[in-house]
Image 1 (spheres, rainbow, N blue to C red):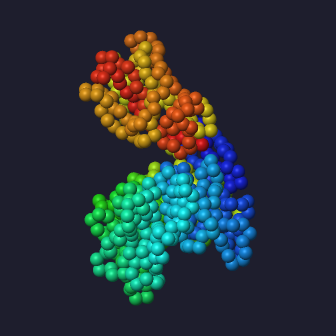
Image 2 (image 1 turned 60 degrees about the horizontal axis):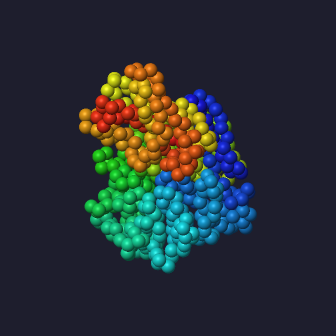
Length: 518
């Protein structure tokens, strides 16, 4: 197997391969270009893309699309005109909006990247840019959307102007905004910022209460049962993001005065701090993957200026993102001169991370990181009626830039039997194949069957084998599932073969899961 790392420059998004040994852990680093080769500059600012706080960069749940901001080149001193933009590997950076006046340009993106929201606008692949101020009215601000792009959440009331602020949820296809309940004993409602789960069922945010010099707040989670306060009231608290079903909430809370701590909450554990970096006393959890197992954000590393991006993984803990990429993924050369300042969003599978960085020229620039973890085996092969344990293995690397070279091979099969390999892209499953069978169906439908083959070998032995080149099959099969191969796509595969004495007259191998590499 071959390993590679990939870096795409802002000037030319062309693939470059660096070979090492084994591709089980590799990564792709992509600087997101602005709208011109030179950034807009004035005496106080230098930026290409992605530098406007928490709403600077968003990534779709499927990892294919980045919503960000870009800056007009050569703007006059004292003005920083910005526009929302959409980036994919095929289209590059495409400007979506006129110059924006608000503070929060990219507040939500659908799972497929075909719908993007700002605080008072929406862009869709079908309809383009749409000013939503006539629909929202003067006091509603959008701060998130569900994965299907149909349900939005936001604040009703202008912070610093309105005496009271409410959170709302609104399915734009079914009626009027729904005002969400306030926490008991918190008469002024909520801060501006809030988030929504991927399925649209749960909203997270923070409460608001006058409290002497500083206003007081607590991180809040709102579902069908009402409001849950996840932290004690202090000067700054909030839920930044929610897992797909809202079961996990992540955010930040003040501790010991001005110390910000990143937290993860679920009902079984309560609120748990996840930042454990020695020498830091400020961290913010910004986003979480669909399952609640990968969290990204930023923290202060005292002794160095500014913040640094982090990633936290369930069971593994807290890592500096740049240190992880340089030390464990071999990207030190590609990241030379860069400083990854904040990780702002993460895809549903936790493998695509976007954020904002300082590039080698010292200008702010959005970035994307894809983490590839190669091929993983799961499920258990059946034992055939002849006592053979057929096992699916891989040969080569699943690179989207190649038209061949990644074999899925069945080995140890009963000889002289027909069989085939099938695959899917909807995830794993574990379903009984037939009553009394030792086989388990491990690929969630829909599935794609590939070429019917014969195991060959000496009859009556377990020396049968056959292979199908998955990349070659996709290249020659228009309309096949997952064709053409796309970097970052997660694929599950399994082998099927005939076994006449067995239940259902067939059996199944183990399964493999792999990420398509660039």
